[in-house]
Length: 239
Image (spheres, rainbow, N blue to C red):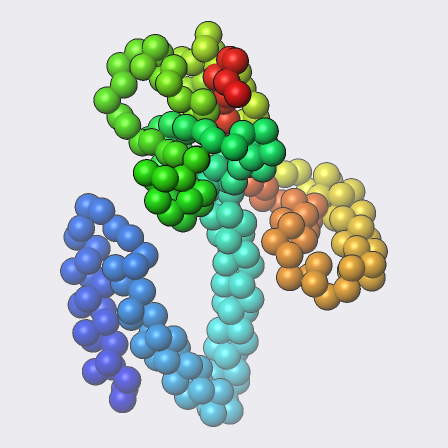
């Protein structure tokens, strides 16, 4: 009861923001410490009660914590695959920096909306940097793109006559259920492979995102589906 006066404004705050058509995590992140504190106070209160009913309730709360951890891992994996634009920009630099001292890249809307931002660009001054970037949305025909050396695009077929595809970057495309028989076959092999990797590389591999992705892909009945989202293209004859 003593915490209700703190939860009331939090509830009102989140409820009011829920009426917005455009919702973002950053709008309500400020209430999370208070909600966590309320959860901790409540859990402490439950654990101090020694009756059977409260012990069952406490067990249920810890089960919920475990479920929350599992779903958080799944959502983190999904989120990591939800920014193909940013991954495409990084891959472009890895592929082409050894060959191009200067380049002019066009970034389309889909790439820009999925992580392709100024933070990933080379050179802070676009006027003097040999690598320049454009998000111009006024182009109306394929010929309007011929002054670019590279494209990050979601529509490679639109540019197929003037640009060649270097690589396609996949992104999140949903989840699917995997039959339990396949999970039973793949999970032991996956765990053994990760154990061998842990012995070889030490604890650092335990913290790597790839480790958790492999574990989830090998042992989870729910799998993240990927499909090509952003294509890296180079103009024919660009040098």
